Image (cartoon, rainbow, N blue to C red; front, side, top):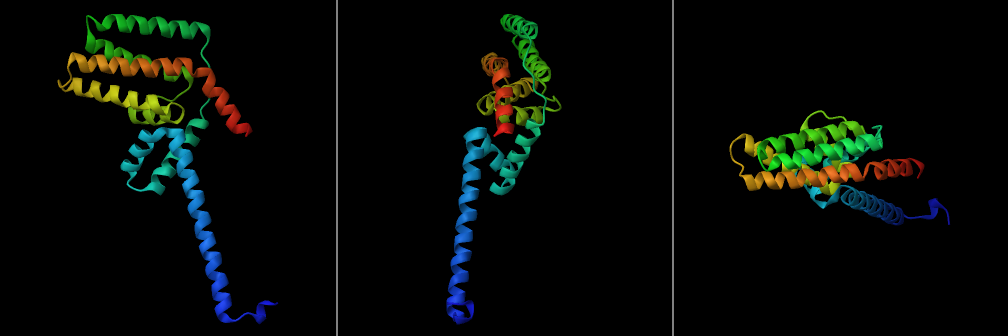
Length: 195
């Protein structure tokens, strides 16, 4: 059978089937991409970006761009001396919380920024730092956002000592994750490039 033997109706049916199959393929690829991004960034960060962008495609493009940006960083492991210095600094910040909660929260924020910088993350504005952290630390990036929100509320006189305590807990979780994960993230990055 040749193409010339087909009727116009048969050709239209074949075209319709090809179009439908193409649509199904596109749908499945987009669904797979969405699931991959949800796993990588976590449900909370994915949904936050979706709400912020207002459109799934734009949100996913932003998440992909964020991942590519972070993959271009030259993240490094911490030397034993750096690790010890950061742990000691964190212990001092925590000890100061009892007498000066607000000051300790500000110091915790600064220490997290210093740790990020030492690891190789650019530390521009807060939102960029939070987005960068969300690529390899999706769960704790929410802690970072929550701690920062409490610090902002405190600056406006709207945060209690209990709120500041919660901010310290959030900062500690992020701090520990960045400290512990220094080697793992670099190994994952090398693996992604190889695979």
